[in-house]
Each structure stands twice: as structure tokens, then as C-alpha cells.
Image (cartoon, rainbow, N blue to C red; front, top):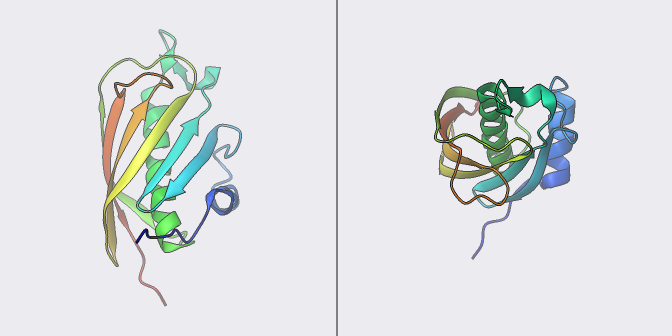
Length: 143
């Protein structure tokens, strides 16, 4: 039997807009889909995301991986805004195309206090990932 999510794409988008006004959710960072233990997001690449050489910058890729992992967790546990990144490692594998970037997150462990997941970043239409991230989040205790 398939596990359902506690928050859908629209609810997650609203949460991000409310809790993280510093990122342009809906304009730049888009929640494309969520499901049991997974999420897909898109970074709509703009000039400000480019590094010299015309490719998506490392900080932009890192931010996309981090937000996608957060979204995957929130989809499973509901709106617990104080869930925080405790570790995030990223390996840049190849040069991304300029333009959009897609993040696919899979949660590997979801416990009461910790969540662990991995994120693959791809240029749309390109099979090989441009980056791979793995991260851990701390989930606050429920009152």
C-alpha cells in the first residue's frame, strides 16, 4: 500500500513563501512534485544564477539541493518549520547547461529526530547528473 504525503505541492509552496521570503519561491524555486519519501524541484535559471563561463553556479546548485531535501521532509512530516540542515555534502560532477536545473530528492531515512536524503541535480533532458548531494536534517521534538 502506497504511503501518502501530509503536504501537497501547493501547501509546500505556501510554506516556503511564508517561512523563507528570501528565496523566490514560485518564481525561481518551483516545487514540481512530491510523493512518499521523495520530491522534485526546479530552479528556473536566471542570469544571477550563472558563474563566469555561463553555467549554473555552485551556490545556486547547493541551495536547490538543500531546499529540495527540506521540501521532501516537510511533505512527509507536515509543517515543522524549525527542521534544520545539520549536514549537506555536494559533489559537482559535470558542468550544467545554462538554464533550468531539476532536483530529484529521495529520503533514505526518516526518523523521529533525523532525516537523511540524497538529491541528484540534472539539466532538463540530460540523463547524467551534474551534481549529487547527501544531507541530514534535525527534526525538532513535537510538543
